[in-house]
Length: 251
Ligand code: G3P
Ligand code: MG
Image (cartoon, rainbow, N blue to C red; front, side):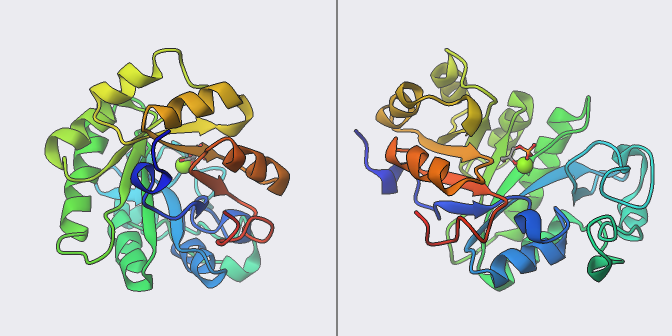
């Protein structure tokens, strides 16, 4: 069995989409909230705006999390910055913009937060999203004193593009259920970790991943009993929305 710290030298509890259920996802307010609730690590999703600037958003369309409509990829980063990505969640967050990745990265660095940057390409933009996000990550974390952020993605082409342009950043392969060939896929991309859907992970697979020396992270874990069971299986980290129930020092 490999050593946990060498597999996963980062915080073991990660605030999902910045602030979990306590702030509008993928906003600067969410990152601030995660930090204010004691978290040392955040995950967020990065997609390209029409001007190819990486921004924080989960869906390819704006309807669910902003006051606008249509495709993210057809709006410039300036137009996205003028949207309200907070009111859907609560009046206290009214006017919160769709942030640029650069602003989110600067905030993480200022707050001393470790980041898992999930590269979330819109359809047909896998390689470009991986390239732009990786290059900007290299710029934003240049000479950073703390541990480097982790780039993850469900998209193999995005991870390959990130590896080619910024190989110094660790990479994580995101999957739903771990496929039988998870190790060859992760190895081909030079990934350090596998990130699985906790609802589809079994103990044997978890133990196989960690025994192979890969970090193992699971999303999205909102029940403390499930989090405890996963950690008992050797899982290295959990992404959670329930920052209240599964706190930064849970693991
Ligand atoms: O990175 C873990 C998790 O965020 C992956 O799923 O859909 O919440 O981005 P999703
Ligand atoms: Mg995500």
